[in-house]
Length: 298
Ligand code: PEP
Ligand code: MN
Image (tube, rainbow, N blue to C red; front, side, top):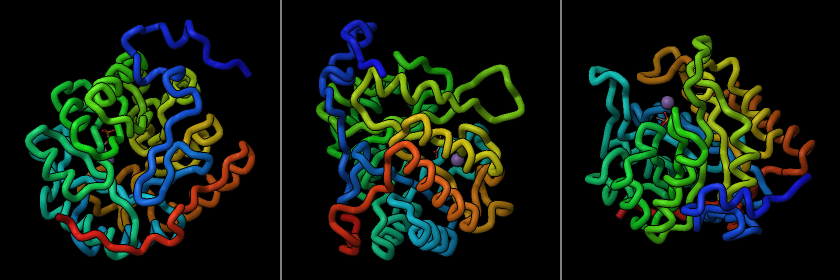
């Protein structure tokens, strides 16, 4: 196996902070005792959108029982159509905080706009910047100053250079806790929602020191493909996965077509553990042991 060379790092001389040689040992982002980018694999799971207390709590309990480390759920949703469900907004954030209090799972949720960074940061453990916002440089600067770890998803038509430049915006505003997430790119193939670019995993890890996740939910758009592509992501060296889970995908207000049921999620989690073992990674465990201390939203 070759190691990153200076010429890789210097493909883009502006990638001063994100490039591998800036931190050769790699970045580990620690969130409430969970290490992302450490030796263990991390699973982030939850619904596309927070829809109700029942829906979120049922999902949170189920994914926790099956081994998830972090709960995801959109409160502010970037929908393609203005007529689609846009999320519960602050009420969604409150429900996420309640789910964290009950399960101990840290929460990751998307921030869509600079006007909401302070609000979302009051509730979230990790701020997600979505694919559609990857080049919103003002938002990148603002989350860079937020003091919260940032999960930065790859733009659906972004090159890896553009992607790392977006991460550089966050880092150059004082925030070293950036997690990358390959979520599929637009190609000429219409049978899947996107094409999960697994090449990106080893390439990003070679060029950068930041943790890299894969999102096989948006990356495929089909629930039946998610577990296999999650396993493929781990086999490719990803530090973990981000997947959408819903207690009743058929009734989901967004992205039901690729949501896993809790049972399907549990099967996927055990498959990931097996693939992890094959590539020398075990599942992450909390450094705080069982995380129970609730933290009420400020
Ligand atoms: C999401 O994960 O909630 C999401 C909207 O994904 P993406 O930004 O990758 O489309
Ligand atoms: Mn979704």
